[in-house]
Amino acid sequence: MLTHANQVDWAQRYRPRQLEDMVLPPSFKQRLIKIRDSNAGPSLLLHGSAGTGKTTVAELINPENTHKINCSIYKGINDVRELQKYRAVPLFGGRRVIVLDEADALTTDAQAALRGVMEDLSFSSMFIMTANYPDCLLAPLRSRVYEIDFSVLAGNQAMKVTMQQRVREILANEGIDDIDDHVIRAIVEDRFPDMRRILKDLQYQFLGN
Image (cartoon, rainbow, N blue to C red):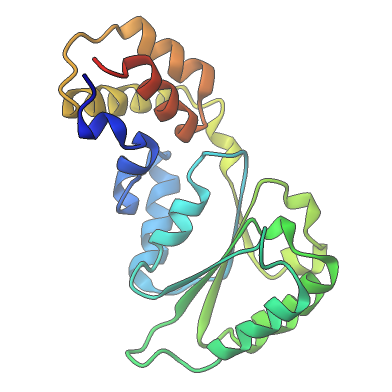
């Protein structure tokens, strides 16, 4: 019989709530935490394959003052012009974060317009773009951001071990005691670094246990 916890999508239930919980190389993670804690630094482009945590990281840099735009839906030049409403400096100081999720879906005209918008808003806002296909972004736009490549996770054996441990913690939290380590290792080895797919495969494998 399924419990309420079993019925919830584990990829959402166990989505990290702070950067410290992310499965990332330590030096990688510390740089992101430093950006978060200082509320300073350049705008960012986080790119790499799906499910590696790009959007989650973007939303956790300044969770108290983040405005997220889904560029797979809002992708045109008029949508970019709408960002001018964020020109004012936030009331309580610091910079807001504008997350342009799936920025590689922006039209060419929208990308061209975004260059000027980013410069106009540089004193009030930090931009974080995510992309699966960064080559779809214009070079002049990419020159305005610091790029962080999440594809480096793919061959990181230490991170695979960390993810296996995280999986065991999740299963323990779900009250699943009959854990086959061979299954855990196989799922992580097959799906890493797609954390989302790992959790979905894991839930399917142990559904109803």
